Length: 382
Image (cartoon, rainbow, N blue to C red; front, side):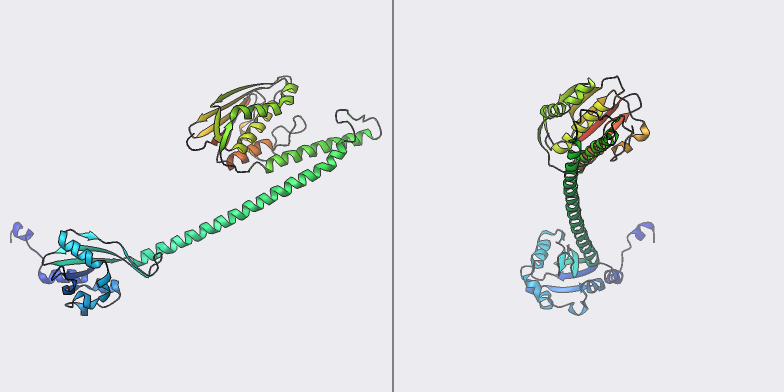
């Protein structure tokens, strides 16, 4: 036998039959004796995989009429699918067939129909029950986990809200006795510490002032994570409001604040913007070298999907090893009573910015001033 003859060798009928019967895919051959009359259709062959897939022995039904062997098929879409494949001569993949629960089915099959000579149609069946059951159980597990996460998030949010309310109430209540202590004398008139009661009163007065400062800072910090949807904001009006609030500090330090706005109005989370503006401008005005009036530059500009707030000062600067720690509550680079504050302002900026979906960063070195940049998400379409 030469090479051409060898290439022409074909499988024998017995080999083809053995292949059909031992295939892992379920096969079924239906002869459409009279294509327009399904009552005449005959089952010509089923393989072992078809029996395994259907969990029934299909060998005895070979040679029987299809609708006598499987009466429910009279009202099924299979009849139309078989006729379409026979009429067009084109193979067709059927919609996946599922039995029982749609999400976690008792059985699931992928089915293909192919035309064959002699008015026959070959059906191919792949059992995907285990795969679909696993997918359904995974979806149910994911949904359960998402529900648990949502419930726990809601509980955590409620707990944090309750803690914030308790802190707010406690801070206000604690300030009442402090006000009584501070009203014992004119806070602008120093105590004469040479007097017998002067030194103790001066000590009490300073401690009360310090506690009031800490409580006020705590109120700012506990309200910083309030999440608000973006809404239209007039940036000039917000900046003017902040500068007016710091007017006494600006005058006392002989400071100068330069501003630049682009654009003038945007939609951003207002709580985060106000917290960042107030705290960063205040810090820039406070941390300057003695005898050197603060020079502060505030810029607001749209950068892609962000509103960038940049506050630059020419003050003391911050060593790189402190850059991460300064955003922690009550952390102070410059300790003692040299500068006012309790170390909460930058922590409030971080909390407010992250709650709004933004970020904050610092560039600084000792003696070179500091530049803080806060990026807040703009509303879509801005």
